Image 1 (cartoon, rainbow, N blue to C red):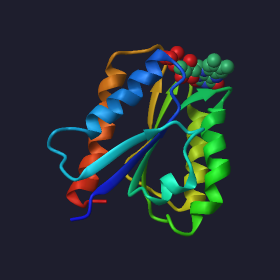
Image 2: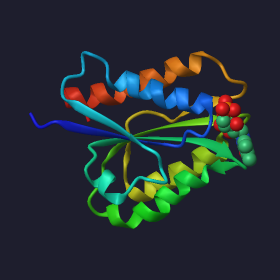
Image 3: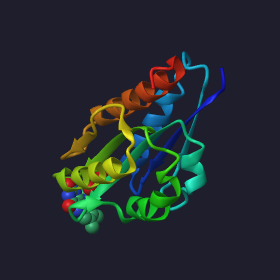
Image 4: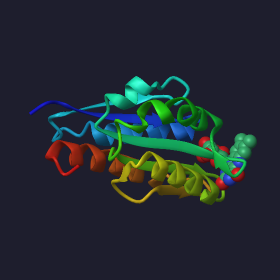
Length: 155
Ligand SMILES: Cc1cc2nc3c(=O)[nH]c(=O)nc-3n(C[C@H](O)[C@H](O)[C@H](O)COP(=O)(O)O)c2cc1C
């Protein structure tokens, strides 16, 4: 079976958000996952080619000023049309780190994902409020879920 590619496009501007990316990657690199390569690319560096090569994607962002990070928005601005035709149906997941809310970010990304016709592999994860160590476990579980879905052919 051809190796599958899981792309993580996540903004990680703080120690806590870096912990979230690391946890997603750790989950995706679970020893039981044989056939999936997972790669984190910060959104400002992610290209349409990265998306075209991906079999599934995990998006991650902070909420800033009621919206997704400018970095993730820049990713969508550059990549939306170049991937629109080819990547319809791409399984996707999302986590949001929000100091207090997350709603505006979730709504905006859901709208973009609808336009792209990507498929939600699971509901967006909103990690809201004061930092909790359990957020790391939720992020790890998300990475594992997506990698396992690819590995087993469910997606
Ligand atoms: C300029 C700025 C704007 C922010 N705006 C929001 C916001 O609108 N809603 C929200 O829930 N959190 C907001 N936050 C909090 C960030 O989401 C939070 O600090 C970020 O996710 C990093 O999490 P951490 O502090 O646990 O590292 C903002 C933070 C900054 C620096």
